[in-house]
Length: 500
Image 1 (cartoon, rainbow, N blue to C red):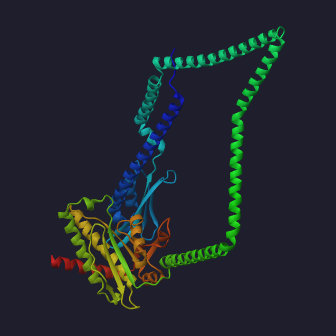
Image 2 (cartoon, rainbow, N blue to C red):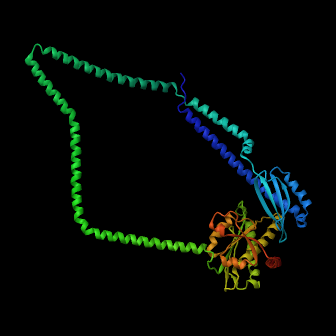
Image 3 (spheres, rainbow, N blue to C red):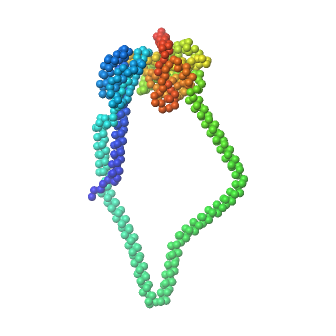
């Protein structure tokens, strides 16, 4: 007779859960890979579209823009292209994005330092069904593999002939022991019945002997009864003795407590009250200090007299760490020289009179850090920080494009401007929110008031923290400031050329 494997249904459920989890992980990983590749492809297409349509966008030639955009909508992943001018008016809408949702990639088109328009490209989302259809060989192979595992388990885990024989021997031994016990009980009952019958027959012949036998049997019965009841009696005696001992100890403890409570109650209550008061005072002091520190860091009216400018590389793939020292160190030295020259030339401007640099920045793998301080109350230190960050981004853009043109290593940069109380917060914001060639601003109301007449800012989209809600993104400057920065940029580059 063939027996099934033990818990075969439970093993089938485990395999089914494993198959579902494996398919889910496959879909998630494939979706992530496709999303990353499509995002990179979309950014390249947007950059290429801006390069091709820059002249038509500057002239607002809708026909040329439509022809150029239609070439890109022929791609399978592109659902819509939206081209706007510098005023935000739509010039060319191409595609059917309302019917198909997807990710939108937007980029501003510039010519020199002037904004001539923007391009928004929408990529189609890939459904989970399409991913499964693409990976159908893997899904079917995984299902067949799990089915084979279930069949193999059902064949291997079946009990062998030796195991079946061992189980049958154990069952027979168990039944034999039960029957033996029943037979012994039946034999004892039969013997007692025979003895009682023989005793009844002897009563008719010998009266004196029967009386003595009855006395002996009664004594034996009484002895057996006393012997059977002896353990219970001992148990009851032990329990009663334990209960009596516990009561005695409780009475002694209660008398001792009555004698000592009068002398120690006042002292204990005083100690407890003093401990509670000290703990309450400490907690109140600690909470007030913590609240004051938190408010001082997040308060929009906090005072400041210095500004920190953080400049970091936009290195998504950690290429700078993998670069050889013979190439990395000269590149960092060039960035350091540009930043120092930018600080020196910028602080010569009459608009920034009274602002000085407290350190000489040095670039490393994590970037550079510049601290500017106001020497008097009229110095515009916040405006100096914003102008320095924008100036270096302009310089780095030129150096980056030139290096890429010469097939050399270079990285884009991003900058952050904050007061000293928000340096750590700005570091986290640059890692989480900052994009390449972008400037983040985290200043109190006084700093925002200094820069309000010179630059335009915008808020972070969909903020998730307090710092992201208070952070502002540089969105452009007025003509006077941009021209002043362009003059300083040219002066820095001319100094570098003369030194070289």
